[in-house]
Image 1 (cartoon, rainbow, N blue to C red):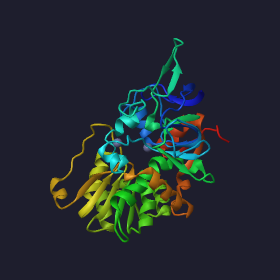
Image 2: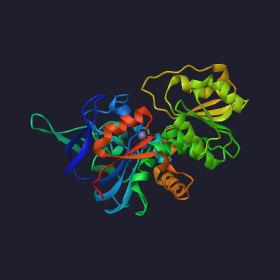
Image 3: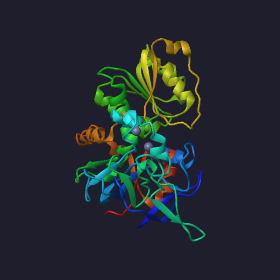
Image 4: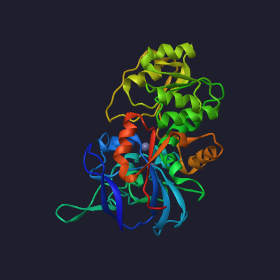
Length: 378
Ligand SMILES: [Zn+2]
Ligand SMILES: [Zn+2]
C-alpha cells in the first residue's frame, strides 16, 4: 500500500515528506495505522549516523496507533487493537530468554539494521520501498526499532507492540515506548531507590524528567535536577525535584555537596556529554550508583577517577530503563491515570509534516517532547 512518510534522505539532512510503499505484514508482524509518534534524540542521532542505520530511511520509534492487519503467526493482537510500539528484541538470545529484552544480544541488528528479522538472520529487506529517480522501486532503510513510525502506517511485530485500552489518548502515550520508559525505568526497574534516598539527574529533558517523576513516586529525597535551561529546571521542580542546580552558576559538584554533603546515593546521567557523566560519578557517595542513560556517539570515551570508583561506587549502563515493555508500559499507564506520571506536561503536538519545525523546537529547548500527529486516524 502507499503510505505518507517523513523520509530521512541522507546523513544530517532535513526530513522530506514522501509517498512510499509499505509491504504486507508477514509472520509475526502487524500493520499499524499510526496516530501519533514522539521524536527522540535517537532518531536524530540515527539521522546523523551516530549509529549505522542505513539511509535513506524512515525513522521514528515512539509510535502509537491502531492495528489494521496482522501476519499469519500473530495470535495475541487483532485488527482494531490500539497499540504502543517499543523497541525490538529477538526472543531467542540469552537476555531475551530471561526476559531482559532491553539487553537483547542483537539489539543493534533488531533496531538499527534497516532490515527485517527472519527468525535466523536479518536477511529480509525492509518493508518500505521508494520509487527512485530511475523509476525503479527499491527497498530503503525501514524496520527502525521494528516500526519506522514517522509515517501514516508502520509494520511492527507482535513482540514490540503493547496493546492498550481503547479509551486512552494515543497521542499523549506514544512516547512511553522509548523516552519515558527509559527515564522512569532507570529509577523504578534499575536503581530501585527507597524512600529518603538521595538521587540526582543530569539533564532535564524527556528522559531526565521521567526519572524525576519516578523518583518522586519512589519517595526519594532529595531529588536534585541539573540542567542549564532555567525553564526545564522550573518544570523539574513542578514534577518532583526538591532542588535545582544550573551548572552555569558555578561548580556542579560543590553545588550538589551543599545539598547532600556526602554525595548522592544515586545519579542518572542523560546528557551523553563526557564531562557531565564525569560529574555524575563525582557526586556519588561511597557505594553510590550512577546510571548511564545518555546515548553518545559510538566510540565516545570518558575519564574517571579510579580511586573514587574504588570506594564501592558503581557505574551502570541502562538501556530502555531495563524495561520489558509489555509489563512496564501498563504500569506507567496506571501511574498516568492516577495523575502521578503527568507526561502531558512535557509534550507539544505537531503535524507529521511539521517534523522539521518540531526538531528545531526540540534542539532549541522550546519543546521538551515533540509528538507528531499523522492525521490518518481521526
Ligand atoms: Zn534477543
Ligand atoms: Zn528513543
